[in-house]
Length: 460
Image (cartoon, rainbow, N blue to C red; front, side, top):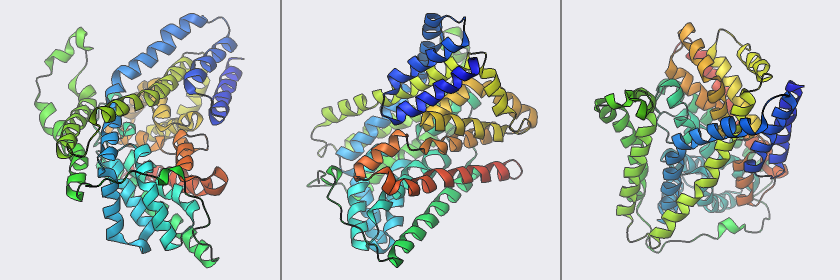
C-alpha cells in the first residue's frame, strides 16, 4: 500500500500541475496523501517536522539567489539592456540566420544572469519580426527560444549563474565552474543538436512553401521601446560582470578568506568549500546589480518599482520549488521510498554518474521543474551518491555537472511551467509547437547528458 500511495501521489502531482493547480497547495496535500497510504505515520508531525523543515532549509539556502537573480533580470529588462543585446546580435547575423540569431540572443542573456522568463519576453518580439521577414514558421519560435534559454546556458556551461548550476554546490562541495570540459562538451552537443533539428524543420517548411503564417500579434509583441536605449557595451557589461565576479570570488577572494568561524556550531559547523559556490554567486549578483543601476541610472525611471517587482517576482518561484523539495523530503521519509531509491541506485550500482542522471531526470520530469527535481534528487539521495562517487573514484566536479545537466532534460515535459509560459508569450499552443520544444529542449539535452556520462567517466 505504501508504494501504491507514492505512485498515486506522484501521478496526481504531475496531472494536477498540468491542469494548472498551484504546487503550493498540491505539494503538502499530496505528500500527506502518500503518508496516509503508508499507515501508522503521524500526519501533523510529518507536515511540520519533515515537509516544512525541508522547505525552510531550502529557502534559507537559496532565497538570496532567487531574489537577486530576479532583481537583476528585471533591471536588465527595464533599462532596455536585454533588448539592446538581442537586437545587436540579430543585426550582426542578419535575417538569413534568424534561428541562430535568436538562439545566441537568448544564450547571451541567460548566461549573463537574466531570468529565462525575462529573456522570453525580451526576445520574442524580435524573433517574431525576424521570422516573419525570413519566412520561417512562427511555430518554431518557442523551440528556438527554449534552445537558447533552457538548455546549454542553464545547466552545461561552466560558471552559469542559473540556479540549476548553483544547487549542486553545497552537496558536492563544488563551484559553478565545476567540470568545465564536461560542461563545454555537453553544451556543444546541446547547441549543435538543437540547431540541426531546427534548421532541418525550417528547411522542411520552406520546401512545402510554408511561410511565417497568419497570426494575430500577441500581447508580448507590445513592448516599451526606450527613447535612449543603452549601447551594446553598456548593456553587456553587467552581464559579463556576473561571470567575471563569480570566478573572482570563487577562485581568488573566498579561498583567501579567514573562514575558521564556519567550524563553530553557530555557523553550522561547516567549511568554506560547502558555501563557497553560493557565496560567490550572491556576491557577483549583488555587485553586478549595483553596476547595472550605475550604468543605467537615467534610464531606470522607476527604479523603486523595478526593485520591488523583481523582489516580489522571486517569491512564487522559490516557494514553488521549496514546496517540491518539502514534498520530496516527505516521500523520502516513507518506508516505500526505499524501494524507489534502490531501483534508481541499482540502475547502475557501480556508476554514480548514471544514478544521478536517472534520478534527477525522473524527479524533474515528475515535478515539471528542473530546480525542483534536482533539489529533491540531491536532498534525498545526495549522501548515497557522494558515497558511490568516492568509492568509484568519480570526481565531485563531474557529479555536479552531470546532476545539473540532468535537471534540464525530462523537466521540459508539457506540464513544465516555463513551457506553458513560453507558449503563452508566443500566442501558440502545445499542438502547434511542443514537438520541436520536446526535441530541442528535452531529447537533445538528454542525449548530451548521456554523452558526458559516457565520455566523462573515462576522459574528462
